[in-house]
Structures are given as structure tokens and as C-alpha cells.
Length: 161
Length: 106
Image 1: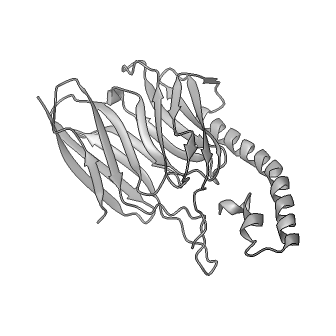
Image 2: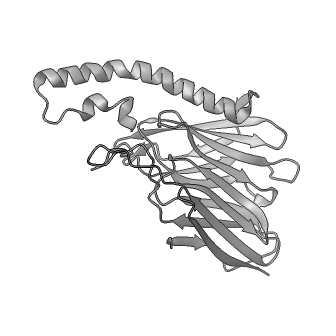
């Protein structure tokens, strides 16, 4: 449940009294601090798993997403990597990492030497406004990254009903 | 039987870069939701998608709950020769959906 970290205070207020609404507002303003620390640690851990501690250089990776998503349940994403895609110099995998979803890993693509072009598209869920990072692993062992920031007006629905 | 939609060009030139688009109908239940009684809804997502071309793997995706419902993928491959494309999706219940398409190279 995404609400665990950020939205539980808001979620519990069905017909709030003034006092509850105030308490909720205070909780919301106080919560992101702790949540942010958690999220940053999650993302760092995920990136560490992907790169194995190797250097991650910003660049060569382009993440195309709409700057404003009305619905976080499905947001289109295209990742392209500047690479000749030859047998000896190519992208071997692309990892997509979310900053604020409950799970940092979103999707991993494994490209074959015959891919021809380092470009993949999919649709992902966004729990809230955040930065999405794509990491490309190259055949020479280097890692490159690119980001896209998406403002989400309606979060991916994790509650039933 | 899952509903899938696959777009592959009918005929391509040898050496051309071919774009393949796939979609499969699936809830992609995240495992983070609860039902109306507060009971957690167990996770059931497609966690693996593999594509082979004449028996050789050309694309593979590992999916997490962050992939939207009805997973969509578009990717490319070089048309090396007429051959069969095999698409395999596997979900958490172990259910596999397999689709096949011929890629005709002229």
C-alpha cells in the first residue's frame, strides 16, 4: 500500500472534523521528511544492485515521459540510449528505477546483440510525482543514466474500491 | 487464455531494423492493495517476458509491480532471415502465454 508511507493520514479522513483535518495536514507536512530518506536509500540500494558499485555516469540515456501525467496508473515511457549497438559496443541491459514507488525496481530490459537499436517503450505506474531513472549497462562494463521528472495529478491507485 | 496483441511488419528487407510491439491483458495485481474487508490482495503480476527469433533470444524483460496493467512493450531487432518469433509471458501463478508470429524477410 503506497499510503503506508505518505497518504495514510489523508486516507483516513472520511468526513473529517476541523481538528482531524488539521492533524492530517500536519502529518502530511511532517511525513515526507522520513519518507524521502527511505526513498533515497531504496533508490541507492537498487542502483548499487544494478551497477555492483561501479561508477554511474549521467548521460547517453534519454527517458521520454510526459511531463504531466493525469493518471499514475499507466504512464508511457520510452528509453533510448546513444550506442552504436554493434556486437562489440552495445547496450546489454536497461534498468528503470523509481524514486517514490513502493518498490524501487520497475522493469529491466535485456537487449540482444541483434537488437539493432537501443530503444524500448513500455507503460509504468507512478505512485506520485517523482523522478524516474533509467540506467544502461554497456558491453564495456560502464553504466550510464538518464532521468525524467513526471508530475502526477492522480496517483496510481493502490487502494481497493 | 490471455488476450494479446502483437504488431510485427508482414514483410521486411534483410538487415532492416524491425520494431515489434506487444500487449497482453493482465491485471498486474501489485500485492500492495487490500480488498474491501482489509485483507491483502496477493500479488499476481507477469514477471517475465521473453522473445526469441529463430530460436535465439532477442529481447527479455523482468517486470515488477511498477509496470502498468496490460503490459506493453515496444523494442527492435535486426531482420536476419525469415524465422519464427516466439513471445512468452509468465505470471506469478505460473501461467504462461505463448504467441508465435512469422517474420518474413525478403
